[in-house]
Amino acid sequence: MAARDDSPIEIGRSGVDVIESGPDGPPRLPGRLAVGWVLLLVVAAGVVGYRVGDRHRAAATPPVRPLPTAAPVVDQPIAGTGKRCSEQVAKRLQLGVEVVNRSAGTVSLRQLHAILPLGGLRAGAATWGSCGQLPGAGSDGNYLLAAAGTTWLTITFDVLVACPAPMPVLFTVEYTQDGRSDVVDLPGFPDLGEVPYSGAKC
Image 1 (cartoon, helix red, strand yellow):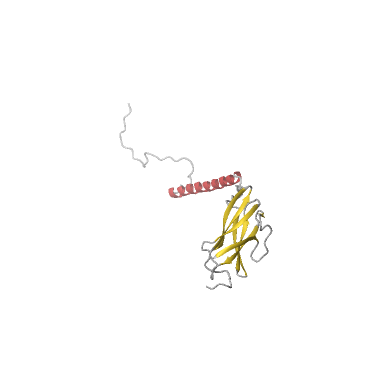
Image 2 (cartoon, rainbow, N blue to C red; image 1 turned 45 degrees about the vertical axis):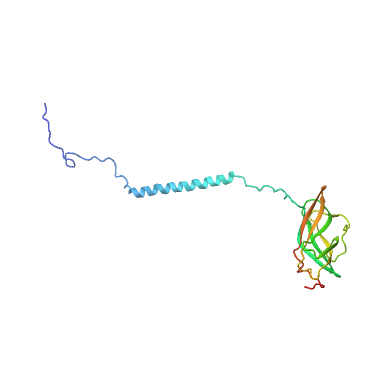
């Protein structure tokens, strides 16, 4: 039986050799530099994927077209345009307003009335025409106002006071359209302070 050798083995000395196989490998990159390269590759791949997906989405999505809008609903076809006129005839005043037909159909204007909250005036003849003009066609009856058409509504007043300047004058007109009758209030004169009147004693 062979004798047992219990003597200790010293690592790194001639008793134990380190075996290396093959040529020297490439130098290893430091850990932080390797992580940086990996992150850079991930970001680049994400950007390329986003651009490709966005281009695909733009090609696949049809353009949005605006929906056609319906014609606006008009509560009252007759409205004032904001234009006013005045004319002195002897000691009388002609006051008028311009109106427009905002609907898509013809409106029949029937009667024009004055509203005089403070009095001071007396309404006379009403005409379809601007101040100073001859009475318009149909002033003694209905006046047909076509769609988008305009006309003047004028009333001649007797002046009953020495100074008519503070007197407000408003108008209403009766009309018929498609067999339906209605009355609309029109803007007039909040007062007559800007209306020339030679006989005024204010």
